Image (cartoon, rainbow, N blue to C red; front, side, top):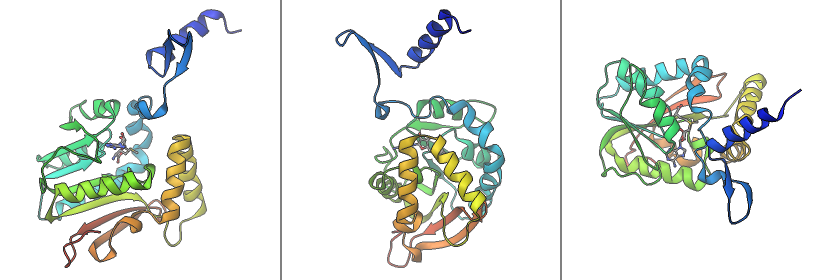
Length: 244
Ligand SMILES: C[S@@+](CC[C@H](N)C(=O)[O-])C[C@H]1O[C@@H](n2cnc3c(N)ncnc32)[C@H](O)[C@@H]1O
């Protein structure tokens, strides 16, 4: 039997997260709009341990890719827990920074032996000057955003990355043959991430993922993971001076 103190503790816990708020005016508890919440509040401490097995190879490959680029001041846009930046730091890169909108994710990035410098900023309107970095990375952020926001984040990345620099996009790209178990697992993970999240993920797949935003003639290299469902793509300006 669950006694009443359990319910009191449970309500206190939810209330302390600020999801549930008491309105004196309305005389009742109400839920804050999801738009105002830090979506990653609960997931932040679990994000790296849960995803380590699937992310490890991708993170290592991004480090490899960056090691082979001539330019080395790096920004990770929507850096989350800073996990990719930590891999880069361990590989010896020092001019690295990240931005993210979630305080909880940034809290993780600023923790631990390899803690990294990162800033709370909206990636769709960053505070950096034009051409501030030589490499920009956006990983696993575009698929969870409405199309217009994803476009805005890419266009900001293009603004802050130097024209002679590189843009690295890491995300789902269901192109060609993707085996059913991989497809189903990814759908399941994205559904668990939340209803809104899943809605944008499905839209992202329908409009064709990265292909929808980027000019193929700017694509320099592509690497595939997770039964071909995840791509690391490296873009450099094409001869018309465009990434997209
Ligand atoms: C799925 S996580 C990916 C994190 C990290 N890039 C990685 O590869 O693990 C998406 C991240 O994008 C961040 N994000 C979403 N919208 C953002 C925005 N407008 N500005 C900055 N960060 C944003 C979220 O807070 C979250 O940390």
